[in-house]
Length: 482
Image (cartoon, rainbow, N blue to C red; front, side):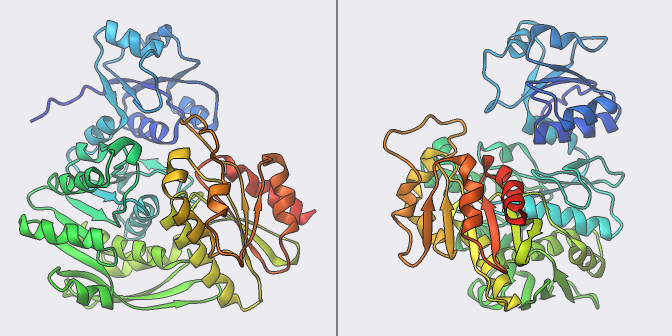
């Protein structure tokens, strides 16, 4: 049994980050003392200050002395904070324990029913749906999400009920620090190979995660994803309780896996998608529910189905969970509506940065435009994220983006990676279908004009990617309106 971490006085390096700031809010809500530092002021930093946190701008040794006594623990993100950070160095010299953000989250979840959402894609959306559905069902769960809930305007919360809902991030294997009572696997597809080195190592981390499920816990897997379903089969052999969800064909394909939820009908309308789901393992009169999902796309239907199963196992009533899903308005940067310009040109923003995600979002956009019946087209402004990912999946990105009618390709957002000589977004456009209108736009400041010139009445515009492309959504909307 691991020794509990003393969280009475916590210092957080990079406290303004989305993950760090959320956990800081939970700590403050529980009465802990919190100090921290960041490179600049921000809205999350100001919010934390109003809650009582002591936060310095800039990384300095003396930042560890903001509280009356020295911190009992220092929290850092090993990926984002260099080892020679002066606060890290000072913490080691003072023999103050240094932990990762995932360690802190694991500690905060102790003593609660842990609902962990994992998978290559869809973690944030599915986690958010679980939270929203539980809230509608009268459950005040604690949560930590990778994005902000549109309705709640926050990504973390300390709840009164003994339920904690959180994402389980596989990118650096930090999901292995948790012990879920309810674990959802949305899908598994090779990614983050810069960390894992091989697809086999990436797949293995999910098997290891299943091994962390409590003895009385439940694994919920998407039957429409072969890798997730096969993981479920292996878990059954290990004696884990497993429930699957998906459409009827997938349910029949993996008949060995007990059905948690079967999608009976899915009808795309102009404003919402009407979904009917049967929950065979539930013997109550609410074993079948129908709800309207405001966020388009079959992938979102699957995510909502997973949320139903997880929410019911956590103790909520299915009918109330379904009502919560009908009211769910989404997460920031997940098909987020940003506004409408002249001639009914709609602008949305999305975080998709992997070919599978790009394809799912563009298919949802096409279905939405088709349901409207106004003859609009789908225009996407895409910014590839990381040179390694772009090189690895150039062909797949080209195929996915070919689902759009017109594409503006920005240069690669390198993030933590240095540019690779001879590599640009053109390696994606070279893989795209000939009938797609593609423009390579290396000048970020000109992108707003380039996109606007490609739009016509009733078009749907998407800014897409994990980098700075999100800043263009407002600029494109302004250009269209002008």
